[in-house]
Length: 286
Image 1 (cartoon, one colour):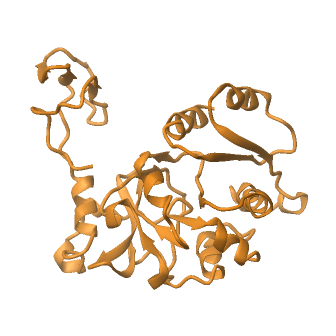
Image 2 (spheres, rainbow, N blue to C red; image 1 turned 90 degrees about the vertical axis):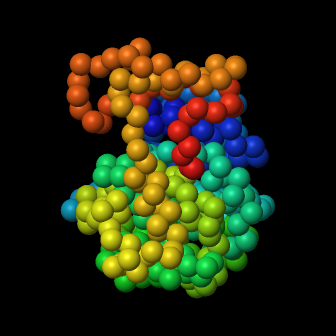
Image 3 (cartoon, rainbow, N blue to C red; image 1 turned 135 degrees about the vertical axis):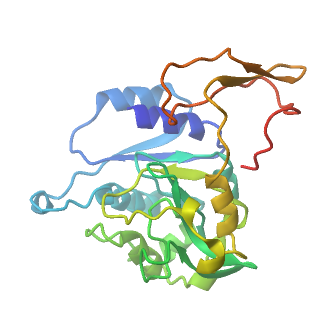
């Protein structure tokens, strides 16, 4: 429920949104349903149990039943719009929804991986698609993470056989390929793929690359969007002993008002936000 509640707070900021909540279960979840009914979001609750024949598979296709159920509902009920998929551990900046709203066929954008502060992204130079970062993750030209893309409802209804395969591996690449989209057709969102507006966890089989330590010149990324993404991952941290308090008049840096006996670098900074005036705040371009 924590993930659902967190995601709902972001979706409440997005106008004209219909949330499809698919659970891999055959029974109602009364706690989840009660929560969904208590918030001001248009939603549809879908039960998508894993087929009996697949429950003994060594690796279950996690998330696939829900994605397939959602696609079936969209093709049978939606007139137009844009579809974005999400895993249960994803976090969104509301600005990504405003950009993908104008997707014509398929749009793509970077996704941050929270566990190791890395990223999966199209590589873009001068508005042209060059490949994917990390380039050793896959040989495909298509997105390799479910949070990497959005699809127009119109194209989904035109290509009704396009779906997530029951094998979880490379499922995202399969559905995009079946939509009849080439890499050159993909539309770049999140400020031309220079911003990380979607964050999620990572799958166990993903290789552990770290963009923050990549030599952009040597790897050929220096004149691409990847240099801007690397900058995001290298943002300086405010020491845990400092807090920024934003008041209606100015921004005052208050030292020693926030203390923590734990010296762990993973401690979160504390911010109190009450105005849009950031005169003395650090200049971070998110």
